[in-house]
Amino acid sequence: MLDITTSMSAGGKVDVYRARGQQTPDGWLVDADGNPVNDPNRFKGSDVAMLPLGGPQGHKGYGLGMMIDAIAGGLSWAGCSSEQPTRGGSGYIAIAIKIDSFIDLSDYLNEIGRLCDWIKSSRTQPGVDKIYLPGEIEHDTRAKREAEGVFIEDETWDNTVETANELSVSIPEVR
Image 1 (spheres, rainbow, N blue to C red):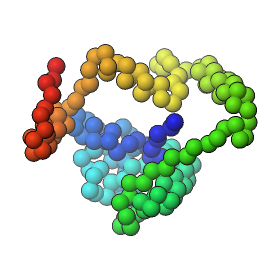
Image 2: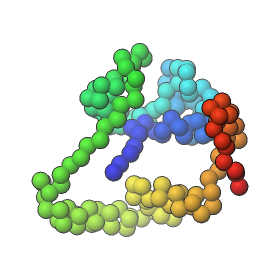
Image 3: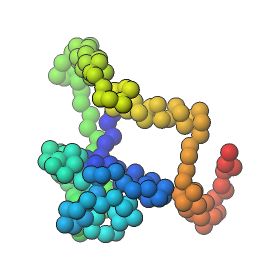
């Protein structure tokens, strides 16, 4: 399973930078004139947009994003992205492939194993200790959070408490 965004980051990560009072990394956001923006407060409800996967010159990411939008938005009937979306704009796509219709499953798994081994054996850049495969960072993060707990920014927690109170939902004890 692969769950990705076709932009430089998920919008929720911009929200985390905003809640922490931090600037977003270079290359994530631009204004209507294409000027770089690092203020996460400008992202929602303004003329600031997220750059496509690959950054300012990310034409391949732009193409991939447009095709995913066409499939996920168009085929799901959620509507494709636009200034005035025709529908909800929250489409998604799930694609299932019957691998053994194309290749013997054990041959495929061996091929994928070789691919993963090749990627993991690559030299790292200075300051990089480990090469991660998709999902490994999230796996490690989950294990760490299960062991140490989850940090929630004050603003996010305050909003959660406020919403819980409005809905008469009890708030769990925080440790």
